[in-house]
Amino acid sequence: MTPVRLAPFLTVLAALAGLSGVVAPPAASAAPAPAQAEEPWRLSGDLAAHDPGLVAGGGGDDWYVFGTGEPGKGGGNIQIRSSADGHDWTYEGTVWDEIPEWITEAVPGVKNLWAPEVYEANGMYYLYYAASTWGKNGSVIGLATNETLDPADPAYEWVDRGEVIRSEPDDDYNAIDPGIVEDGSGTPWMAFGSYWSGIRMVKLDWPSGKLADPDKEPLHIADRKAAPNAIEAAYIVKNDGYYYLFTSWGQCCQGVDSDYKIMVGRSKKVTGPYVDREGRKLLEGGGTTVLVDEGDRVGPGGQSASDDVIAYHYYDKSDGGAPKLAIQTLVWDDEGWPELQKSKA
Image (cartoon, rainbow, N blue to C red):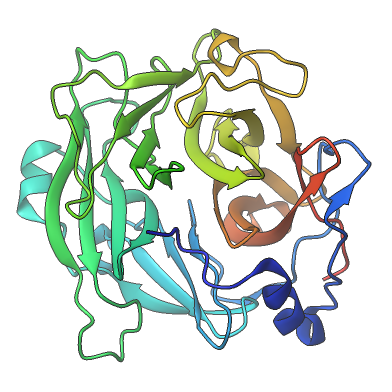
């Protein structure tokens, strides 16, 4: 059971080097994790992917990005973009033409599906996504599966698997922004959450992809401890014996007024406790900065990672605040903390 990391890091860089000028970095850098990264890969094509769920290609495989749906476009369903090289992106439509009826009944007023995550296990692709309405925690995380990501494959079909978890107005968490990781024994876990009590975690089960124990209270793994507790978009990356919990802090979805930034903490156990570079617990407001505004790129966040590559969205000040996809390479310093590679792309 493996995450969607389809090629070794250096293979990906080698495949891209002729197109992008990316140079493979050393395994570690002595510099501390920066507050920003100077130059993401130069991307082209349709980049309007919000909350990107990245599937990095390698060895001839295409790249895919799944993004939040747009009301009125494809029924508001999860959007799909593909690329042959990770640089030039094409819009491929949506997962479905209409939002499933069970979702519209569970979340009255839902207009679009949010924040997808794609994870591969045992030859099956699991697509997790959220359904909610702005500023409310009457939300659900749903699941669809597919045997392939290639729309030209005869086996291509997104099968609706229904609800994974929901939150109600009297809960102190919000069931949105799913992020999947497997622990060392191959057990899947889902981090999720937004505002309210922050980031939560539940154990999943393969092959169903659903909750291992539906009656168990979700674990609590990150909390800013300051109103309005603007922390969300949890994503966990494994590296060298640690689990790294990436989150987005601040306001998204406000164009150039967005103040999203990407933060991180780490733990030896998937369930925590997660701490930042200074040893502060993420449950007590800790967090180390990975990426902030730079130039025309405002409010970076909504991140995911695949094959040591991180994808996020930002708002382009030079284009009226339009949301756009960015991709950069994750590298690790001598103390094992992540940074985004600074390179001309």
